[in-house]
Length: 319
Image (cartoon, rainbow, N blue to C red; front, top):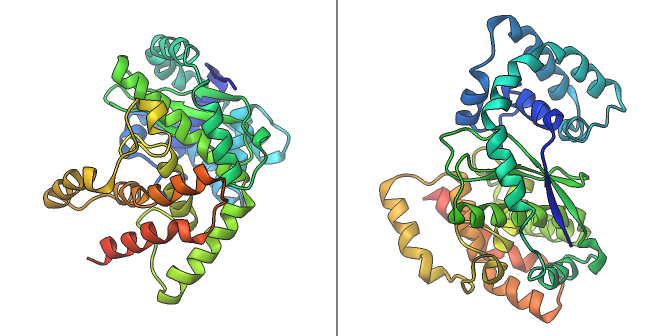
């Protein structure tokens, strides 16, 4: 299995474009990134950005439009229209691109030196757990995107039905950040497997109908319950914060335990209200013992997997 990083200016441009168009109001929108990307925009550009935003928001599946734009598949009217009307903004993007290009080259070379031999068997076990064939563990491409200079950590995205991962690596480079990048890549790779799993959808639906729907519980801010279930499982597999099932291979450290990380989470609670993302990440750790047992025993996912995490999320948001 290979995961190959590549630098594609067109992909990076359309990622920049959708960010500055500000079409997305979910947890995926990052205001600091928007501010950095938006600095090159001039008042005359706002009409184009408004048009782009309207086109994306008007679609029933906006991420499918983005998937086509990132992958260079201009095979429908909306993707072609966005590509056409946004042409005048390419010059605006150039200064962002030139600023980060050397950093992206450095990260491309580092990522392509990563080996995944120690992960292949574990990923196949995860595929079986999700009800997939072992052959679902396939090669993937990572498109590198411009990071903002102040960002200390990497961020990734995996769009359903895509054969690529989007990655904003850190602006700076060291061994600690290399480990963080590898974890984020595997977190997004896990999303790709999860997106293929009908058993995951069935387990999530049953959990939702049992634990959430009867109480009419509201999802964490910025998230739908569908995205909560996706993130719970992906974090449980690979997370920069809680390690996850792949922690021994990704960090050389054993599986983390709830009691081990509880003091740090309680310190966070004492300082301020945790973000939705932090709560989901912490809750996912409570799934890890049962998930590990299931995977190692060759069992497939069911609704029971999610119960400790969903109950904890509800408790934390009600407190």
